[in-house]
Image 1 (cartoon, one colour):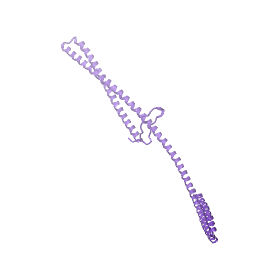
Image 2: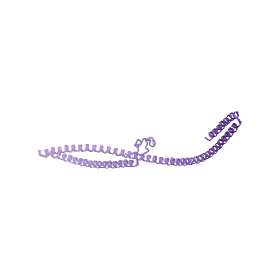
Image 3: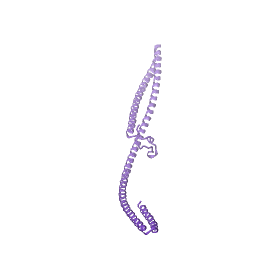
Image 4: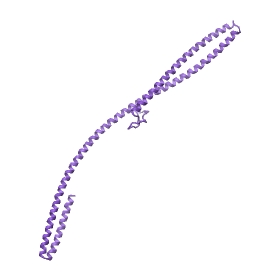
Length: 252
């Protein structure tokens, strides 16, 4: 049997457990179960009516047999009265009638026992039928509760879906804004970096020119002046390199 999704056991209204709380059924399965129960109820009703008909027939037979027995008793009584005026043949007839009476009483007792058994079976069948009817009502109520819960869950799902879509649209808008801002900032940073790189390149070229010029003048001035110029130029180069490095760090 196919289970319905999202199915979980629960309590019915009023605190009483429903027969379907322990299971989850699809709509088609519940319809099939109710159909089978209705068919069983109809079958039991037909059977109960048949037993009732047999009961009425047997009761009529018992009444007829009682009438027959009464007629036998009247006949026997009449025979007893006539017996005093009859011969041995009448006595034999009386004995035969007595035997027939006893047989009729025995048959009557048998029919009454059968009738009692039939009535007991009829009462049991009626109790079973009432149980089926109660189960059908319980299943109907459980099925209706299940459908109500499904509708509530569908409404909740739709509300959550709408809320999630709104959040997703808002998040997409924020992401688009962040990307646009990031692109603008990245372009500005690249432009600033390029500008600083051009400054560094210009400083490097100026440094090279100054070093070359200083070395040329120091070479012309003599060895001591050359050493002093080299030392000063080297210190100036290191200072310039530190400045360039700091500029790079500021833009990374």
